[in-house]
Length: 259
Image (cartoon, rainbow, N blue to C red):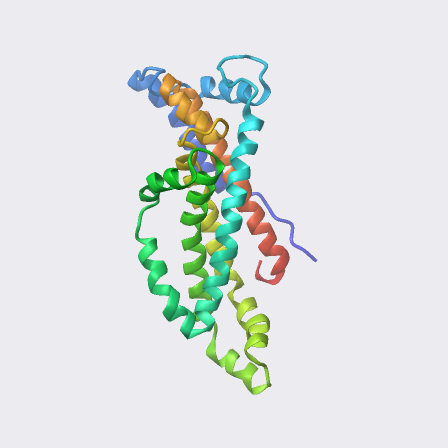
């Protein structure tokens, strides 16, 4: 029998205080609209961005085409980073030789900031999806790899030894004991990676792509349209949170007894 989940109203305290501050402080400080648009103005622009029934900006009704373009890049970047990160993390955690071969080099590459890859990515791939996906997948790889490696290394050695005593070979140990035991750590890495994907999406879309929420932010900055910058920030936050909740839901389906 499942317990009915109640709404935790404490979760709404900080967002509520943030919204109240947004309404009150600009009036108290007499902040001009071009620096910090009012909440009502941002809401109107957001509705117009989605529905297109007010024509307040040049992006009226263009939310879905830009959101789909951004989601496409995030999904590809996250998929590449997840597959490679999980594979290398599991192999490095399970096989000492693989760890000795790849782990030092991976951590050296990890020290290069994502912005540092921006110029060479432009040279290699030019303007478009390839550059954005490359930057996203590169940055998102490291949280998956590090958390997966740590999760595999943290598997109880006694459980592994018990599997060996029962006759399990290396492959059976990996699939029956190590991988299931590592799933919480792997999904923690995937959740961190998803956040990185949305962060680097904006960097990748500043390369001059025609569509995408990051591209709209860049164009809005050039035009001094601060309200649309904030609208895109809110849209990215909402989409990113939805993606995070999807990952959590997948984990609950796989490991319902961990809930």
